[in-house]
Amino acid sequence: MEKETILTGIRPTGHLHLGHYFGASQNWVKLQDKFDTYIEVADVQALTDNFNNPEKVRKCVRELVIDLLSIGIDPNKATLFIQSTIPEIAELTVYYSNLVTIARLERNPTVKTEIKQKKELFGESGESITYGFLGYPVSQAADITAFKGKLIPVGEDQLPLIEQCREIVRKFNSIYGETLIEPKPYLSKLPRIKGLDGNEKMGKSLGNAIFLADSEEEIKKKIMSAITDKNKIKIDDKANPDVCMVYYYHKLLNSKNLNTICEECKEGKRGCVACKKELIKEMLEFLKPITEKRKYYEENPELVDKILKEGNAKAKKVAEKTIKEVKKSMKINYFD
Image (cartoon, rainbow, N blue to C red; front, side):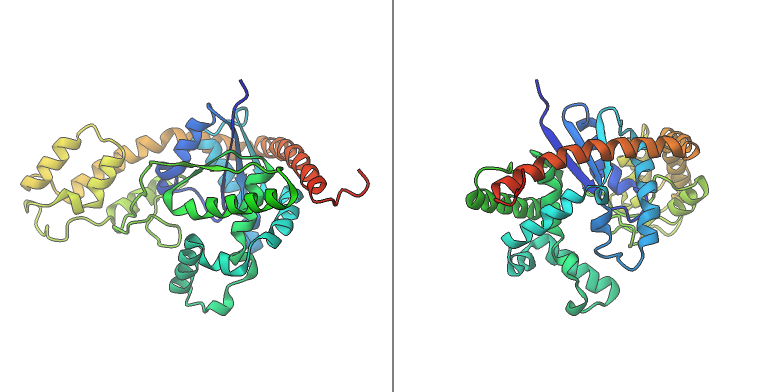
């Protein structure tokens, strides 16, 4: 039986961190066994807010691909490709841009949230928001439809982007005839992972993340700085593990001594430093297989290139077929 196509993408703006892993990418590893999986390294979308730093995006493409291979993405099961190598996506983006108004893009809740975050982080005015940034949901619709993605793994915060794509597909089909497949969200039930500082989101720009590529020393330093119960002053003070990020990560890793850790913390029988050192040991053990795979791919860059070239070629064939169908429906296939 032919597998349904599933497509997901991630912007190359840095290494994967635990938030990415537990919140999304570990699920991609499972999905590649069930679906015809395409994973896009969305470098063009990364340029929407890194247009003045192309070297960063270029460097991050390879870092991200190695991260994905290290966590278990199998190029024999999933197609890894780089967005900019598929010009058909850009062409579809142009066609779809006529099917959505600026007002509709500005109303997109995900876009509104990201614009607000940009302003808070960088103090930018509305005038600094580029057309490319505002229009990236149109580009995402092109990503999805180029590969006829039926299911798109997303968290709840990304649902407005999928709905935007569905609207574009419906409008295209209503004008030009049934051509495109309307995708459905494959809602991730995985949690949003908190940062070391207790922030509800772990993020690159927030400085509160443990990256899968972090060295042993970096991991030790970060965990030793993690927020604990501020009311615990002395080592034998009773504490509340539910407000402690160290206990939070013990739970995330499904620590063998979780009940003991919780009870000792509540009873004042566990010091924060000892608890952090125990977490460091568990974290390093958890990341060990990922670290070993990463080392292998870093030492074999030609293999990474081969995987990407083959993935790009496969993805391009699929996108070429889609663009041919789209242009035929739009009556612009002049010499076919």
